[in-house]
Image 1 (cartoon, rainbow, N blue to C red):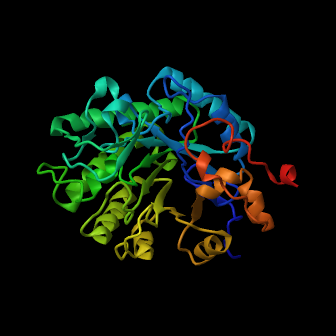
Image 2: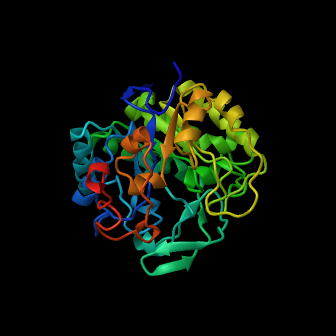
Length: 362
């Protein structure tokens, strides 16, 4: 039988009724003060519970991990209580949801951080671009390079956040190592110029990721942990001199853990420049576990990737903003509702929970 989007899949401990994943989508709608998930977020995620798996929006692991206004955290009791409302609402609709663990590293601004401290990074390299702050767009600052003896404290922040996610009732967690945020900054040599055991060679640059993965797996069990990477994404001023060698090594180094999946962003975001050559089939072969593909897939291209064994499941991003019942729309082959980009980030119910399902739209 040919595998398609509607073929069930066992992903670690999770039984998915279909292979359609709701990708993590930052929407900047956590309650203030405190970056606390609330009832509006619970409604939003519950509306999308027919996905084989929901991956939550990126969620900061500590107060100093934040990079944008009104993004949720998972580092205090009020946030845990807020996320419990979300997971309960998703589970009541028969859904499954992982939390994405996030530290933005240099992609922040002192106005977002406690005591207006500098953002931290592997190296003191200022990224090109602008930070999205409570006072509007401001140029990124030069981050503070982490001392070697500080890194264990960051890993402990990941452990605490993973434990809080467990308490909040999630089905698993995804470690965000993509899109130019902290772990990706350690991985790629355009942002990591360290001279200690976390810099230089590919194995050294991979070390921080592997230490985070080992710590989170101790909390959850590896079969309820995923990792997200983006080998060629230039977003947030990212580059690497040998991306194929780097990310093949990342995939091979993750194999011994027995993770639930590897989530791969196969495209670039917000760049008109030519992307480096990269063989994702080779990456797929390097990783022996389940491969989650992400990057502009539609129904036909997703089914082709599954049928040709180029992926085990497919993550959809923007289509899930405006199509809460995306699974049913793809099943029936009906046109997808367009999304209003003006309401992607911040705001209230408009453009968040007011997109109708098929029976409401007809």
